Image (cartoon, rainbow, N blue to C red; front, side, top):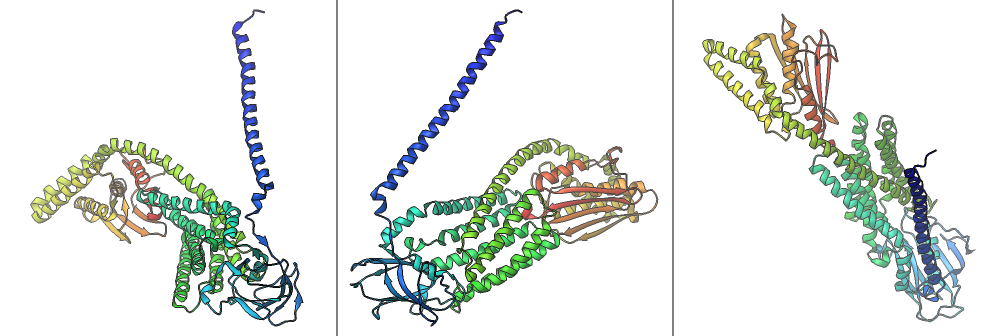
Length: 612
């Protein structure tokens, strides 16, 4: 066996390469472990340091008895569950720690009023009955005067709302601290930093989504309207989440503002989520969803108007809003379930996430009355998941549209090269000959009609050649004029043997130039002309459908066997170019159906602006 030096070199490079690779991985693991160990050290040192405890508020407990809605006095314990919906609450007793004069007590009021007396003398009053504008959530301070050990403290709590947070009394007792608001604010700044950062991220990302949607609309890209609605919905939900925290009053003392904005943001976010879901529905389901969206929009406007008129606070309208929103939510949820059977993968996921958030939103409103769990926690978690999905979906749309733009540039280049050929193909030599021959004979019979025919022929040539420089969409009304000019010239030749019928519902939409005329020409040339004896009819129909505009060209000519239309001499010239331009310029489709002996039907479907 001969020794091959190159084999030895390969073997050695493999061994040393493997050692180098393993060493690189080992170094990476060691570096990461070192940083984690350093971070763990800093965390433990700070936790054990006495400095970390100086800024912590000192909790207080109230020890004594309670009476609710005039009932018998009962012992107050840690397991006592007090509902704000069971009437006013009176507490009688003492604090579990010695309170020197001048100390500050902080507590959290959640839409309830509070009155404090010491030995029968009123020392603190934050009652909704005295100042209705105090309705809201926020931290309050009570500066203590001199208090002896045997002094008795009486606390009276009042819930002015039939709808609200049933856990408000328990929240107050759990939030008693012997501290000042600066220390409390510093404590919550650290405690709520991750949550607040996430809320700010949602707000910034939502603004980015809205900007992306505006760009989509300006560039006529798909899903611009849906992305805009979901982006604004995310922005409103971000505002709701940012304001719906226990420490918001430590950053601003605008209780009425915080409550009103939080409530209105939730109402409008739910409405936008509903109309966004409707964007994904089709046919009758979309119409039902749109009606439900209009009803909810009107209801929101009425609730806001009632609050502005001072008839009822915006917070108190919540129960009525929740009932109506629950009905709309149920309707949309059923429609989404039905729609998911025919939806694409990503649309199905988006519908499922939106429907889940809708149901959780209503559950949170009902929980405000039943107090089954901590208010707002479910909707925040589910919305966080939906927002991440929405963000990924938006990024995917950007990627898809970027790839589509590259493809569009390639197609546009091809179309520029073929545009002159396309224009000249529309002006067939036999058509020019037939038109001029018809005009020649008209000059002997009817000079005025001949002059009109010359004008029509000139107009037809001008419009056909103008496609060379046409790179934007034109109105259907302009395309219709070109079609009618062509058919008038053909009727000079065929006379009463060519019948034309128009069923036009709408003309105020856009499409590529020379996208309908070739279909009409095919109907005359390959359908009616080959029929032989007898008359033929060409029907041009425009339908205004919920999702698109349908342009239908049908004839009762000879027809053909599907799949063989490209084999005939000159048959259906330009159909491929028409289909390419429809797809490139407005994401439209062209479908051709035919049956021998019965005729041909060509259908163009142009998505409406929201999908364009």
